Length: 252
Image (cartoon, rainbow, N blue to C red; front, side):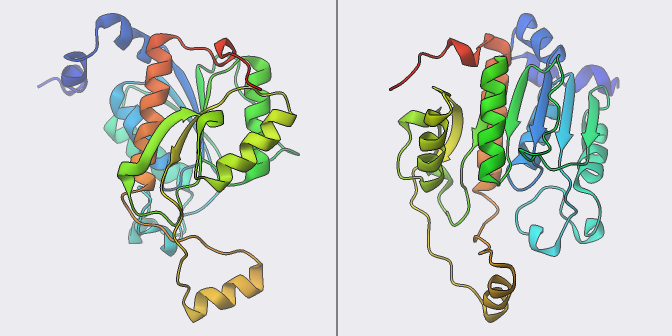
C-alpha cells in the first residue's frame, strides 16, 4: 500500500482539487503549542497543509498532562516544538515543518515570513496578542486569535466570530478596547460564551500564587482541544476561500 497516496484520500472526498492545492501551497504560522495550539497543529498537519511553522519556547511540564497533545510522562522536560514536530513528521511526512524556539513578545517579536498565508494566535500573554494583531493587520495578513479557554467546562459554548461581536469574555473585552485604540477594526477569533468558573486552588496552588503573583487557571482536556480544532478550521477556511483580514469593514 502506498501510504503517501492514501493519507489524504478521505480528505479529498470532501474537498475539490483546487482546495487541496491551496492547502498544499499554504504556509501557516502558529504561535503557541499548549492545549489549544497543539491540537490546531495536529489538525492542520492531517489536513494537508504544505508548510507549518510552530513557535513556542516552553518545555513539557507535568501540569500539561491533562490537556496538551505533546504532554506524556515520557516527554516531560522536552522542548514542545521538538515533541510536536516529531509527531507531525510521523503523521504527515510530506509536510514541511519549521520550528522556532521563542516566545512572541512586543519587545522581541518573531518575524512573520513573507510567504505566510495565515497566522494563528494560541498564546496567553495579552500584550503579545495585541501586538501580533496590530502587526498582522498592518501587513494585511489574516490572523485568527484564540481567546481565554481557562476555567471553562463546556466545549459546546465555543464560537468563531469577529472580536467586536463577542460577549461574556473578559479577555475579549480587553482586546476590543485596546485594538480599537490601535486602529485595528476587526479580528477573527475563537471564543467561549461560557462564563469562567472560579477555580478551587489547593494549598500548594495558593503558595505558588503568593510566590509568583500568578493565578493558574483550571483546565480540562476537552475545552482547549476543541478550541484548537476550531482554530485550525478557520485557518483552512481562510486558505481555501482566500479571505483577507483587510477586507473587513471598519467598526465604530
